[in-house]
Image (cartoon, rainbow, N blue to C red; front, side, top):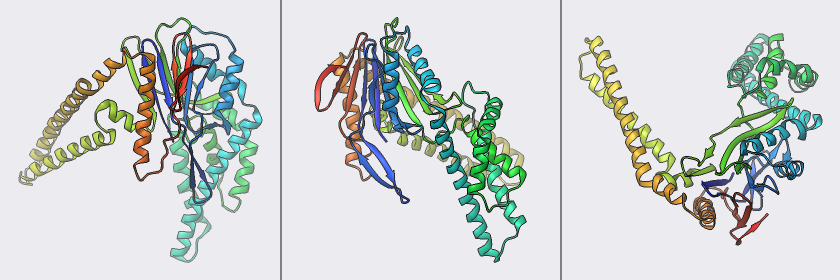
Length: 415
């Protein structure tokens, strides 16, 4: 895991990222943390565009650093009017130019194997449980268990939201036409002893095809791109979730973006963001969520206690009163939410954002670095693994250049 932050005002963008990475290994999931990973890069050597990555350091088993540098070489000195055009061109490069069929097939094979092994393990556990309970199991009972596992798994994926700009039916048809032989082979190898029906096999074929066009992210990477287009006066930011490129289609989700044309400034944390959000909002997000849920629970209990005071024979009165009290409760809770938000804005968020609007570039960099260090400190003094730590890389993006520094090197350097 990691912590990253982007701070924008009308003159610059500050990006900061820690350098910790957690590696899991072995059947018991042993973990090792390294504090030497680069997560912050320049997307162009000639233009003021920065890029940060978090979560998975690879895309389809290729390091993001390799992909970014390949794109940077392809882009060269080309300029674009808007930051969005850089983002779209970068995504087009990932989708169409970078990955070959061999890398794609290897990645698809790995995902299918993981899905089939999971299904086999789940089915085997239920079959063994039935044998332990009854002493034996019939083929029909085995088929019932297989169906009870495969059907919900298939339906869950089927009803997930489809990736933007992908036509599900067309994608599934093309995917199966290209990879049917591979899927058949893997089903035979991994589920060889299971009595699969024709319908079971059909759904097993469709599961990976659907998976690659749905918003289900297993090995996702968060990608943050910020800076200036050639014709842009103010900086902006785009946040993306990317997992892979299959059949020239990106498994992609666009997250919330940011622009300071009207707001004047903004602070956006990524990945492990609770400490930074606590600093900005004045309350820990988990505490705020707990408080709201607890208040809702109290009102619900209060409603039930009032209803119990009415004699049971007046059932219609109970139902009518319960509905009216719930409406009143909702109004009170909504008012509470509004007042909490107003308090946060007036006493915490607005003062910070107002100050950020006028921060010079060195102070902007210091603030971004400090916010990452606060998260690192919190991890260091807690009993949880230090998944945030190591040197903090900082980039300041101005209209005409990108500046870079770290906590070991406070003098900003052009890159």
